[in-house]
Amino acid sequence: MLPPALRHLDFRLFWAGLVLSAVGTQFTTVAMAWQIYELTNSPLQIGFLGLARAVPQIGLALLGGLLADAIDRRRLMVFAQLAQLSVSLLLAVLSFAGAVTPEMLYAAAVLSAFAGTLEQPARQALVPNLVPREDLTSAMALNSAQRNVGMTVGPPLAGLLLSIASPSWCYAANAATWVAMLGVLLLIRSRAQAMVGRAGVSLNAVKEGFAFLLTQPVILAFMVLDFGATFFGSSTALYPVYARDILAVGPTGLGILYASNSIGSLVAALAMGMAATPRRTGLWVLVPVTCYAICTMVFAFSQDFLLSVLMLAGTGAGNMVGSVVRGTTNQVLTPDQLRGRVAAVNSVFTMGGPQLGQFESGVAAALLGTQASAFVGGLGALAVVVGVAMVPQVRHFSLVEGTKTPEAAT
Image: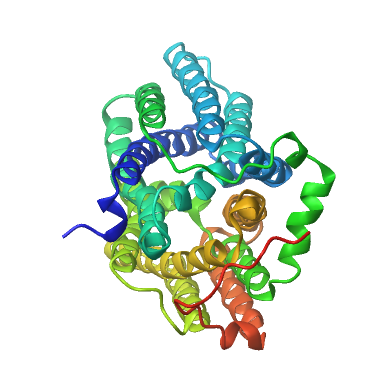
């Protein structure tokens, strides 16, 4: 039996294309992290990759949201895919030529993040235009699952390819997936969106989006929780160090570490995709993120590869359950003509947190050591959960089926 959202052809095409694209993205993510650690032997340099991605993600997210509300979202995604295809091809050529330097990898990370940031709000805001309201929770869960399908399948394949070939082939494989995603975008036919035109790319449009968010304390609290938990708890930048120096499992093991987090996320997302919208919504966000923090702390000092894999799967599952419920809340409470801008602000938190968290992990590892860095990060994530739980509106929030989408702020 198919999840409700996959019964709609346009969403099936969109979802399949995103899965393939997510697999390709992981080929580049794993290859860049391994390549820069091999070039520099420095966890701090891996952290700088996260910083290179975070700067455009935070600085340009609002522009992406304005564009997602002002112009056709599919067209915006097509331009972004073309830009990311160009970056992947350039990395492949430079790597085949043996000319890659850390500076080039940072530049590629910036350019790729630039395109992805402009695309992300459109990608999120397009989902409600592909399915009816009653299937939105299923669509949001599956939309999250697609990324984790890619992060489950992609890293092990990338690690295997790195062990028998070179990063060049990882970048080339990613380029092929961008081409496939372009084809999907040309096939889908979404329902008409509430576009605001050129007037939407303005300071007034930004103010309108923030004015709406100021009336939504639950959405704001969820955004703070997402950013804080992933900023402190994300230990992704440390995986190459764990794989090579602590667990001694090499590039193949590195791929499995990346995939472990995603396997947990995928299982949780698929389960949520079959479930109805939870009524005790606040608790369905707070409890899973608490599990995420605890699993991060256990992973920090693990010397056993299997235990490390299990703990990373736990972090993925915990973060995913909270993420799906937060995403559904945002989509239901936000009017269509504001979804791009709200998604853009949300992406500052959801993408900026993990990427800045990689930089934070790299700096902390350089100062405290790798394992202490991961443990302190998990402890910080737990503190953020406790802080957000102090907000009564969050603890008692319930997103029932009768919740109405508010009118846009004027």
